[in-house]
Structure formats: C-alpha cells, structure tokens
Image (cartoon, rainbow, N blue to C red; front, side, top):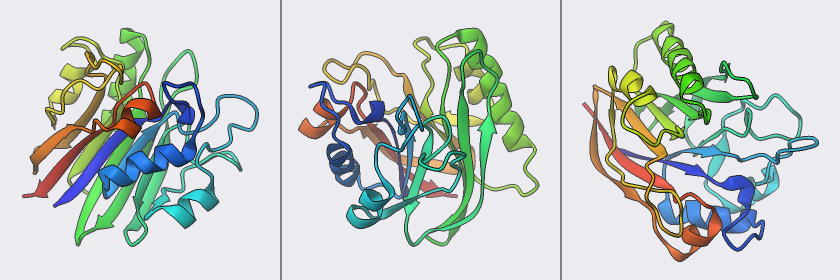
Length: 230
C-alpha cells in the first residue's frame, strides 16, 4: 500500500495572505504521503523560482522532487511538481506540454516504490472546459503511448466544477477517489482536486486533509488516498 496526495499550494500564500513555504511543508508532513502532486509550486513571474527551495526540501522533508524542471530555479513544470520519498527510485520522468491558450503542463514519471512499479501524472488543468477536454486527451494519449504497461495514478487540480467534461474522459480508464470537496479551504464546496487510479489499483481509504495549517496554508485543502496494488 502507498499513500498519495495532491495539493494546490497557491505558491505558498495562505488565506492569511502570508507566503510561508515552511507552513506548506508542515501540511505535507501531516499527510505523510509517499507520492505528492503539487500545483502552483513555482512563483508566477521572473525566473519562476520554486517556492519550496531545494535546500528546504532536502533538509526538512523526507521527499525529493521528480527532476522535470525546465528552468534553473524551478522545481517542476508550469508549477506542477511530483514529490516522492527519497528512497524511491525514479526510473523515468517527463514534462508534458498540454494544449492551452496560456501555459499549462503536467509532470509524468515512473517510480519503483515499496517494491512496486507505478506511473504517476501530476497536472493542473485549464479554467476553460473546452481546453480541459483537450488537456485530458493529451494526458490520456501519453499514458496510452507508454511502451510498458503499469498501474497509474493521475492527480491534480482539474478545475472541473461539474460531473461531466474531462471527468467523463478520465473516468473511462480510471476510478476516482471519493475524497470530498477541497475548495475553498475556509468553506469547502468544490471538488476541484482529484485523485484517479487505474483499474488494477484499489482505493483503501481517502479523504480531505483538514487541519489548522491546511485551512490557512492555501485556498485549497489537500486530498489524499491510500492505494493497494492488485
């Protein structure tokens, strides 16, 4: 079994309008997941520097970032980062370009973790339903094009308020963790953040992580799922 989580960390800016990467790490340590998909993990302007610096991650966390960054000071790709336990083996990784009017991307990787192989995609989809469908198609095409079949987990902020659109596309091959609403952190009503697993995996438990640090750390609450391999 492994625990996965997804968190739109809003560039480390909390509902109190303070930027605190240390608080973001506090939230992640509370969840204690083996694999984490982060969204909005880089600053928006300038060099797009990582909010959680490499030193802070290395010295104060059990995780390392999947090496998908395209900029020297960034941690991921268009704000998307996948963190894994330091003892996990990253056997492949790729930054995915997603069709969009504004820059959008995803991070895909293959891991050997807890003795099992797993393919992971972390993403942050568009505000437009039309572009979300196109982006979902690009992510699914990437999975279909992989040479080796293996269980897969897709996670991220899908920006989908309804029950159709890109959810129907992803639902053809993956099951959704019933985590519950995660947005807005002060009064969660929207299920914008999602965890999806391929049919060979079983969701043993899942939920929304609601703590004081999480309620103040971002406008999204993190979601998590415990996954068993079939």
